[in-house]
Amino acid sequence: MQKHEVTWLAGLIDGEGCFYFPKKEGAPRIQIAQKDPWILLKVQQMVGARLYKFRGNGERSKDTTYTLLMISGSKAIGLMMMLYQFLSPRRQAKIAEIIARWKALPLRGKCNIKTHCKRGHELNAETTF
Image (cartoon, rainbow, N blue to C red; front, top):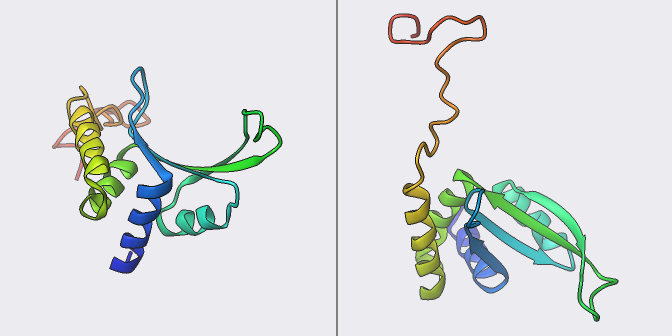
């Protein structure tokens, strides 16, 4: 991404987005919700993300359909790090808190390390290259 795209995205997320880390389970997340999905489609093309549709649950918004963009896991952490310098101090503090919690997770990123191939052979320094 070019610098002007990064700064535009930082402004959008600073104003309309949300950084969070679920307390129970899950991964760090970035979310943006909008009534009009065109801006989220642009973000999806820039960074790759999932889009979800949902209906409002308040009295005034119960008949309104929203689009939610979600980025999670290590992709969200990388984007948080890239956007950090362009965000408000409040958002920077939230990102620092999320990254600290993410770094403290046991086996972070190691749960997908394979120890054996699909035929049952051990993967080690002698059998892999």
